[in-house]
Length: 355
Image (cartoon, rainbow, N blue to C red; front, side, top):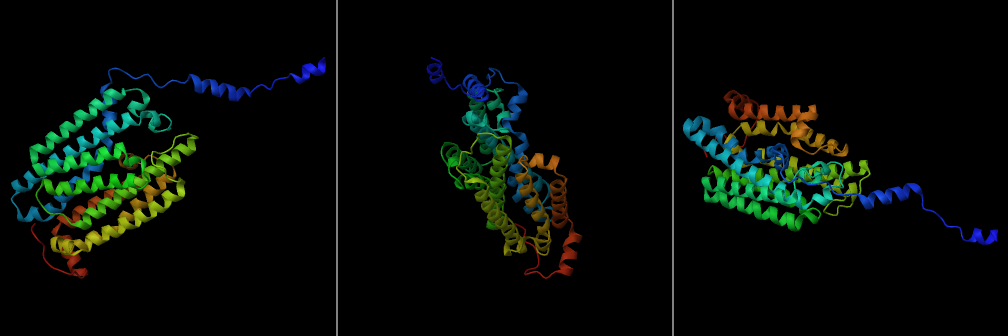
């Protein structure tokens, strides 16, 4: 009798596993708010990432280095306002696609320890509201661009098509995803030249492309490391094969960034525009390398990839970028700097072009 009872014994599941299964079965997504707060809308727009649109202003900065001495002040001011208008157009366009992308990726973002705090993933804004806000922002971007020129409008439309392809398909393809993002930033740099009606060096466009390619892979590494450390089941949309593949891509893009920067500063185009000042630009390369390394280290620490957050929390990044911007201003706009450089270094050409 007892033996028969012993043969009918059942094996009960582990209590911890049972509790986890019950928790997973009853887990519900965050309740989405019908009317989002202004703070949530602002977070959805990610104004901190508008710093990435500063590439739109590059053409104006390099043009103004000579124009402040050769053009009337009113002409410089007019082109400066045009450049700012182009910056606003691309900022609105980028924010619009951030909103739409967050709405599309909300379910996946809820599994990530950092992305789960985004407005849509956290339930602060509904998916429908986020898409509507994104569309409104895109319309605003087109209106800003159209008020300036048809050429700039075309550039913003092209950027929009690129982002649409990214959201629909390309973000799921390794390397292609980040290449698409970097192309969008290179387009911004070219559009900045279009906005003020000047030509831009292909070396400068390639420099922007490879820098943004590097920062794109930095973001992928940040996402991967932070998810691993949190023990999250989150997986990237693009099927990157772990850290080793991203390390290789980071190495290639970092080298190409430094190479393209040097190629621009030592190019005939830069020499014709800036004369001896082009040599001064080349001498700022160590600061570029410092910033590249710090972003690599931040990625391995699982820190935020946001440039604004890096400036707030990393003193070395802040110092390197402030020094670069400050010395860039000195090299381009202080006449004595050009005289010193000309007296010390050989240059291929002398004089500076006015356009």
